[in-house]
Length: 117
Image (cartoon, rainbow, N blue to C red; front, side, top):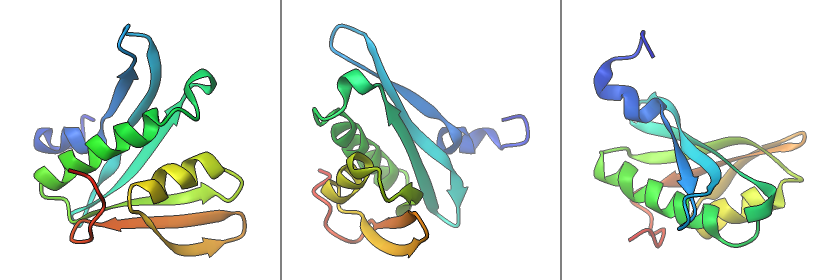
């Protein structure tokens, strides 16, 4: 982070996802801002998979990125066998834009309705 301008730090930050009882559940955040698009990354503990927590966290991150002038979000190199991640992305309006080998790339353009409000 020393080489990143302070005003851009939020675009290179991961946030801890916690339960209502403050148990750590996972992480979500951005991998940097390039040309007003950001790449999202996330992970959740096995015990919390399948309950919609990551979909909810991503929905909030999408809203935040819109409010902070990102034009869209990408998710690249999602493994084809990672059905949970694909479901999280597609539930939040991401579209498949490229497939190669065993990975899929997604994009969400903020001018497209994504049920994020």
